[in-house]
Amino acid sequence: MADTRTQILDAAERLFAERGFHGTSVRAITDLAGANLAAVGYHFGSKAELVAAVVRRVVEPINAAQCAGLDRLLARTPDPPVAELVEAFAGPLFDGMPAGDEGGARTSRLIMTIFGDPAEEMRTWTGAAEDTVRDRFLAAFGRALPGLSPEELWFRLRGILAVTAVDRVDVHNQRCPGDPSPVAGEAARRWAITFLAAAMSAPPTGT
Picture 1 (cartoon, rainbow, N blue to C red):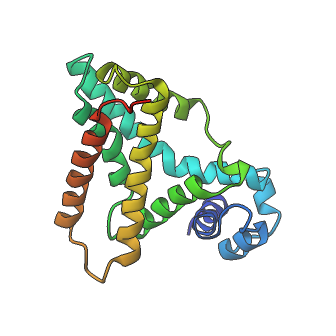
Picture 2 (picture 1 turned 90 degrees about the vertical axis):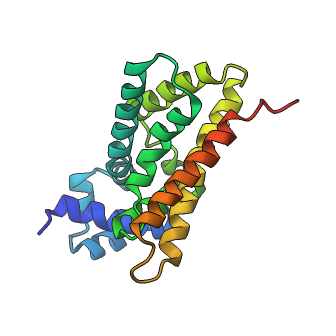
């Protein structure tokens, strides 16, 4: 059996993804986890610190894979092309939210909740590691797309996150037993990267 801390994280991930931050009570989390009410305070300190731990547990492996992909590209050339940068950034998002996997379904719903939840606690969980990933990709995309303003570049990079999360949520919500096949999942990844590379490469928006 998982330890109490892991059980709380699992329960909180499910409930935050389904109900949002304010819609999820500490009692609901501990009831689902089979833990006592004081366990959240003991292991995490507060509900806000718990949601930060939940999100980091999901995001950190994705960030690590994104950085590893970028490192491989930069080892070959200091200026990778846009399509390869999109693959390095978006590919781990698909890998972290695989079709037909309940863990992937929870991850995709949680990421969509982060985008849409108005709670401040869903905005303040990021730290130095997340900032480093963002800044490294912004710098690489900035060299590949020198005509874009920093503001438009950041808007487009956030669009990669949004498109990927929406696609994964749709897959998990509509799938039938035994479907989609791994081939279909890989095809969706290729389609998304082709689409996103074209979107990232579009000329700057006129003023």
